[in-house]
Amino acid sequence: MKPIYLDYAAATPIDLRVATKMLECLTTTSGFGNPASLHAYGREARALIEAARAQVATTIQADPSELIWTSGATESINLALKGIAALYKHKGKHIVTMKTEHKAVLDTCQHLEKEGFAVTYLSPEPNGLLDILKLKAALRADTILVSIMHVNNETGVIQDINAIAALTSERQIFFHVDAAQSIGKVNVDVTNTPLDLLSLSAHKVYGPKGIGALYIRKKPRVRVAPLIHGGGHEQGMRSGTLPTHQIVGMGEAYDIARREWRQDDERIRQLRDDFLLNLRGIKNLQMNADVSHSVPHILNIRLEGMMADVILSALPHIAASTASACQAQGADASHVLRAMGLNTEQIKSSLRFSFGRFTTEEEIVVASKALLFS
Image 1 (cartoon, rainbow, N blue to C red):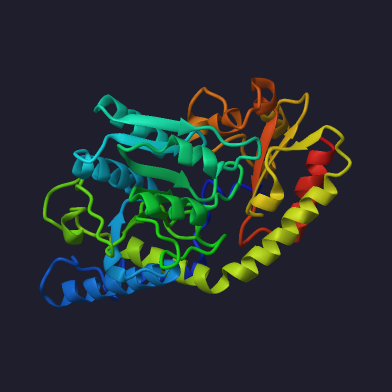
Image 2: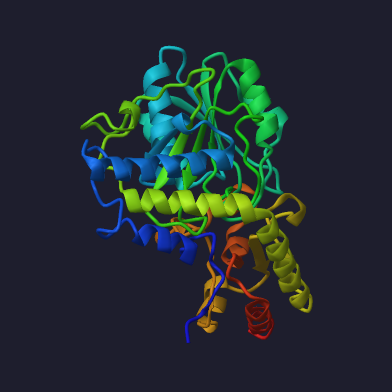
């Protein structure tokens, strides 16, 4: 029997409805042609791609022409940050971000520092939220870009991107949002939030791995320098033959999320609350984030005086994590929890449980009981 999967923040299984749509593009049924080809097979693939682009655009209230396909959120983030830096460095070379960002943002910022850019890394409040006044104080005359994650992948904390966007818009500073964890969890509306760039991923929302998108605002016009050259695809901003089956999968996954996220949220919130209720007997349990400012899908807790990796080793039938999947590849403890003020001992006692569309009440009961008696 496979372990109970409670690591949806790392990756979600592909929804069967998504897989069915993708499969149709992998055989002679339809959509297997090169979308850049001018013949009927190419036009058929291109039509499927544009339909998927419209699905993703509708989900975030964007115009389809504002979306560029990428290989995932990491590439989207690189294209946004490096692309803005390259084209607008004449206006300034200062960037502001947070210490709790995904490594894709932090590592890209560190690369830009080597290129001569100055980066301010803001610390969050103990609850993981950004103090808008501290952000305002960090902005300078030469600040060209602010990059803030919407929903944190380790804690589930939701940043107030509306307040941040209002500030950056007023100062005419580009605002990039890492929204890899947002879709299917919270409402995203680029029409009402004046952000400039938004990084998206499919494999966090029951779509395939290896596909993502970057939203680039057209009014007022935002431009980025391309990272990949070789054919001028995607309005010249991302060359390469488009993977029709993956794009179709992302489009379908986003369309399902748009239609079902509210009911998913309600059900998952109940599962999260039941999970916590079942753990009420653990006296050394502490929360690492305020649930009132977090999505219910991600729960980060710590068991004071206990080692998280030892707990997980003793519970092989529970698939959870101690940090983000990317973070876990390195030797360092969670940079997110450290930025929130936790010490090394507290970080090493922390666990992340993340719930999803296919999590059942029975699984919650079994997992919570196993943790209770571990």
